[in-house]
Image 1 (cartoon, one colour):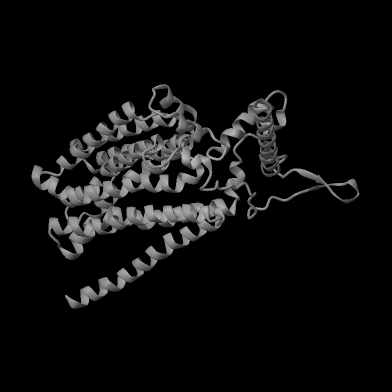
Image 2 (image 1 turned 45 degrees about the horizontal axis):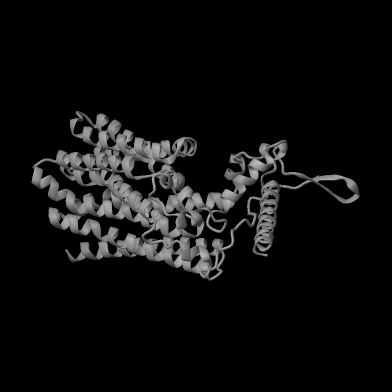
Length: 424
């Protein structure tokens, strides 16, 4: 009797999986089907063929269903203390070290150049982002092809060595070359981390996961902005700051090589992953994309139509309003964020002539609130998803708050500056 019920349950699960596979394939075929730079042709009135025009505003509803909190998958593997949380802690340390090497010049430049060398300061500070912007797309491709861990290792090895070589620069342009190389190496960090997260973190935990690893940015910024002036004074030279942050990145390189695993299966082979968490990560609710991968292997035998459409539609990305909106959001967010990171120490020193200790204290104030708001905001976003609020509405709301409130603070800051100048 139990054998029959087990067989019936297996058949029910197979039927449900096949239905889900057919739904995913149908949605994929309807959205990504491309023929002569137009969408698929459909039959019109009278048997004639008509072409559906591509609509950049329409996004197919492929949003996965948020599992119930009472589901067995949540009781089988908690988030805190799990192996995937351990992976997030390693990536948190990675981002902390990454920002040590990124922000160190914002502090050291106060001691490297005089107040009338604004051009040299601007060129040196911007050189990092010349390389940073140029390597991310290629790094994403390489991480997907060869594995995120390998690319992440190369990123930190190049960052550590390049940072330690900065003190030997003899001219502005040699400084620019070193910082651009560091930018190229760090541009590979986040694409490789995203490749790792896609294999480790279920989709409904990714808001928290991203907020945790992103909090490392703020910690690294705080350590550098607050501790950088003290390191310079202790060493009696600005080169000590680059040696300290470069060595920190080389230490993280060793940590990644010894303690970070590419996939849960690899960690399971070493005996560091529990069977309960492995079942959780392989469940359909936690990883719906794996089900699509299995279905592809079933359809590869002769179904050339499915394989032909298994390409990335770059042209439609560039014509997609939701995609371009996401790019605009990131551009505006990074504009304000990087403005603070690059120029805040120089701003306090040049405008208000503060001491080193005051410069360190005032520079870290904006960075203290970022991880706090980020973690609580991401947890709130996950809670909204659990309350059946649509994923699109959650992302829109968080984007509006994330851009609107900093814009208001920047606007109010301009009035504070004028008032201080009048009082002085």
